[in-house]
Length: 443
Image (cartoon, rainbow, N blue to C red; front, side):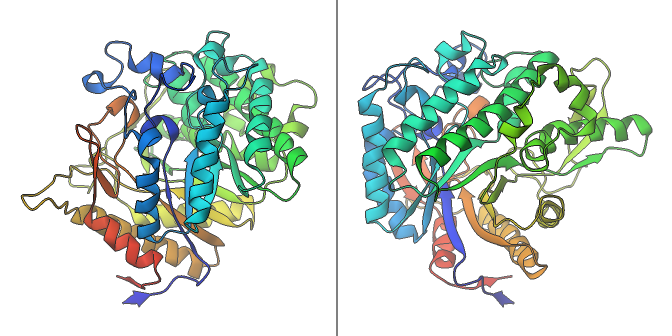
């Protein structure tokens, strides 16, 4: 069965600054929390760092050519705060802004619409030294940074996102501690959630002040939560996990309140007028999706829950994440029901598999092709069910630095040989190219 997407459906690809740029000590860039974290022994698998990553800072022209040949109409990237403001506040680094200037101009010349995310996890280390997202002042310094980038690029960039997956910033960075900055504190998670929400609202206001016609949103991260059993303690744990991981940002930003399981813990950090700042008008609804999680009660953990592995025999990616396109379809349907009819965009979806170059120099990744076919089928089904999905961005354009997993996990549709920086389009690249060029989806 072959199915066509709407003619104006937006096909895109996504990346993030720290995961691809490299050049961490060049042209005045400051230190980020991920520079500090990745250079701390034992924090990242194999001692990997983002020092070079995909060397996109020097090879961006080659990467734009890959995008143009892919046939995508949009590219979501992030700007690196420490490249633009090395100290996180105060002096602006002109060379950092000039890099994104060149990138945006090249994208537009290639008929690729730039979608700019202002923050993808790389807080300037100098701000973390002042408390990071536990410090309310950082929300206002983020506003200043947003205004700097907007003054430079808003004449050419229409679509902006304030944050990518702020839930992961708060929970993994300040709770689990397996992401930068490596803090393990329940109170810090709650502080960070509220500061990030406040920063979002202030950032939207700063962008609107620059240009009233910009298209603005945030990028949430939604993965359905299910209790591991029907025991009451597992169901309670599941509700807490869902509140933190799925609704701690979309609820206050769109509905104007925190979800009940965590609202009381966040209340001490809320000041008069904060909700009016946080709940700004958004122009689109965007989220990333990777997997459904099963949750059980776990005594002695930070929030008394833990995520358990899928049942034996369940198909999974190289990350151990369940492959379940029906869960993805349901997220889209549920999001429309909860948050309304804003145009919806999937800004990250993809899968890691153990890709390798064959003897003829090619990369066959049939598992990823099958994954994309199934998950794009779920998008098509959601559209047929009345969900206003307007676009899909594959994660990721390139194999890259995969945070705490270093270079051991490959999500790209383009293979990167990290020793030589050679790029090799995978079989999934050509599959996605055909869709972006208008071919129907065969299921």
